[in-house]
Figure 1 (cartoon, one colour):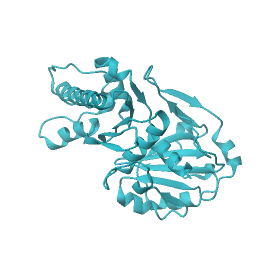
Figure 2 (tube, one colour):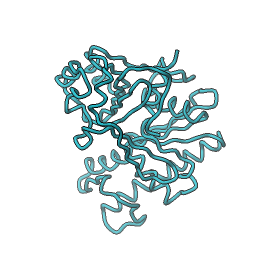
Figure 3 (tube, helix red, strand yellow):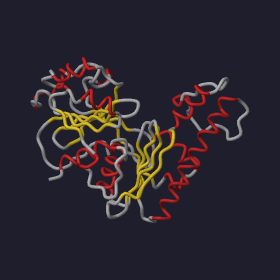
Figure 4 (tube, one colour):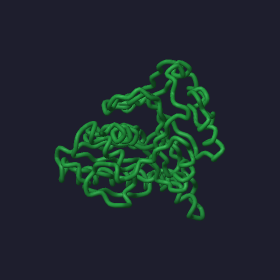
Length: 299
């Protein structure tokens, strides 16, 4: 589901989701989501460089595609039939410069970090999406813009009722009914944050890196690292299962999507422990960008 079109436009523009830990980028050609990538937070000097970019080839290296993909358009697609990520390569990046994007490239932002939002508002051609622009009903003022956009993008794509699970720095559940009315959700520390908290806030427990966990740990561990993995992972998965079952009690035909940096890892674990539940999940990393495109395409 990496490529998707909403509406009809002919411009080239960037979307930026400012998350709690990183910047998430998307390149759109008109209404088509062409590719996505992530970067660390960036200094104001790089923002000024971006403002002076005349073509995609002029993008500052700190913002542009990862080095291995500099001359290729890179997208990832995921599905529920198997959790392997599929890499697709399209035309070289240089060919896009012939489409003559605006200078500077238009930038649409959705942010959950006010200090970062203020930094990017110095960009000369920027639009910041606010909660009031999202056509969900019954939303509350402090609902995260990323949660609202992801829910709107998922619901407009697959239909409502919809539950979105975001497996990022925080693990969140966000849902809406068939009338596009916010049902509500929940927030808890994500997988990496739980590991980091134990490593940083205790005297002798080690720091666990999620990237080092290839498979489910033993439930009853015989060493400290695996005991931490067991406690965090099995409890987190049980919580996800409980929320999904509660969702289906409310809306038996309700749909579920999962996004976020830990989406594939958690989906793989769910396939092992709860295959019936995993088979009903749609894995899609770009829901927030889909939501942004839906908002911009609305009359």
